[in-house]
Length: 219
Image (cartoon, rainbow, N blue to C red; front, side, top):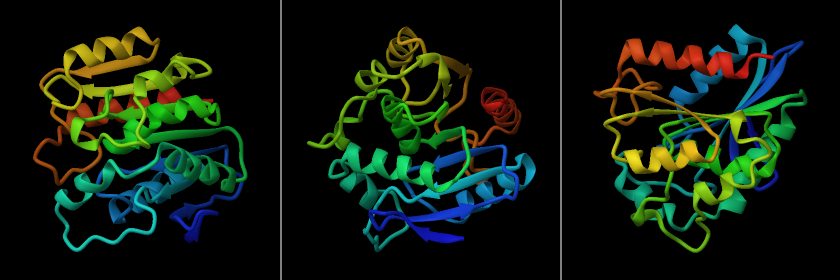
């Protein structure tokens, strides 16, 4: 069900009668699309969760389906706007507790949203641990700095691949030092879990990562 958040940001809400918890999904760089709306519907039905997917690029339209246009404007995004939308989405679920899961850029925002104290559990699938240089901008703060303000870093689970250029070893060690639980998958590249059409998809690792995701969110 398509809804609009207070800011005007588009979101897809999948409510379930008698929901046990809520889940907010922060998509990857390509934003909200059928892949994530379908994921929300599956999780809602299978887990009895209220689930919502939030579009990260509020009010923007793109003329191509490549990543170039999106990479070019990430530096213009503002953490307060993005996290504010994720928190607003959580409040729309009308159930407690609410968790947050993010993928790629959304995983970076999962780290940042830990400082909001709104989510009881957070999961970052290969989220950027440090803001990539080409994404630097006045509204972009560092995930590691915001994680210092997390209510409990142990509530954050990070899924990373050892061959992912966005999560190099030094960054992963810095992430571990915050108290975040980090699970590494040897040989895995960026995006190895959430999209079976990607060349980097690894079915066995994806299945294990989803199992860890569900265990982390278990009540």
